[in-house]
Amino acid sequence: AADLERRFGAFEAALAARLREADTAADAAPQEVLHRWGDQERRLNDALVDKRAAVHAALLDCIDTPSAVKRLEQLIRAANSYMGEVPQPQRGATLLHAVARYYRRVMGAFGVETALDAAGAAGSADSATPLQLTEAVSSFRDTVRSIAIEAKRSGGEGAGLADEVLRVCDALRDESLPALGVRIEDRPSGVAQFAIDEPQRVLAEAARRREAAAQAEAAKAARAADQAAREAAEAARASVPPSEMFSPAHDGLFGRESSYGALDAEGIPLEDATGEPLSKSQRKKLVKLAQKQAKLVEAAGRR
Image (cartoon, rainbow, N blue to C red; front, side, top):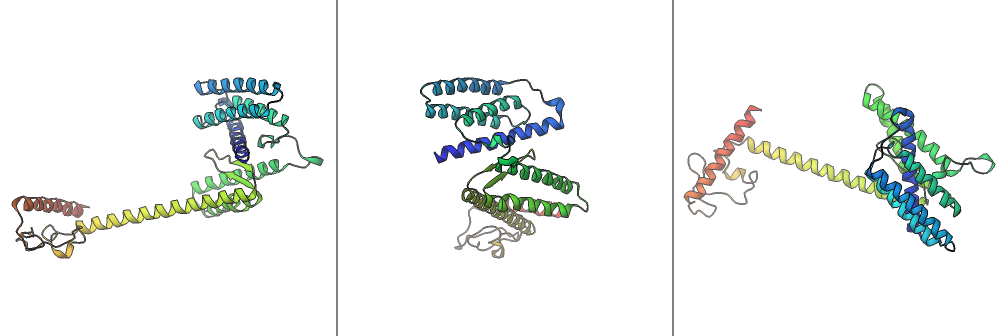
């Protein structure tokens, strides 16, 4: 039951955020609201029609609530798939509004308030509901954050202040609000997705995100260090003349575990580490390595 509640809550948050994105985009560009339906829209509409009939039949069958919830969950999966396949917020907005209205009506019949009711009726004595307050805070943060991002992108004197504002916005998302049971997830559109849950669960998720981000940052730093080390080693090797590359002093630089024996006048080994003479084929390979090294030294000198 708890897992089902989480899935329904995640769907409500995602759909509410998608509809806010669509409304924001429609306000900014009302001429782009209409879109021709494609295969994805037709599949979602078919799912809405089919599951609506199935829920209705289940409730007529002695109020078979488990079957009705199962069909509603299938509609949720269809809507989630659609939102994943179609990232443009304005596309399918009318259809998603229809899904939201139906979902809200069914959940209301079960006596359950949803995140999709955030913009609905106020609480007792005309006070705001927790969802409405969360939406107001999230919307205000979206506005402040978008202004700061634009200021940072523009550069100039306001860039430093913009960095600090973005840091505070992140702290609100990652520290202050999770302690109150509010989950906020930033989206590329600039309209964040929010949900209300148990504080312990939201805090645990925030801690996991911080740990994952720290691990990703550490991995990034390790990759950068490895790359820098490789570049430094390549630069060091490129500074060694081919006549010196087989000397014992450069064994580590060229990845040799043991030193060659005697070298000829051009620095090409005559003997292996045990003093045994090298064959013609072995020396031929070493000559090719020396020629390759000469090209590397020459290329480095031109840079």
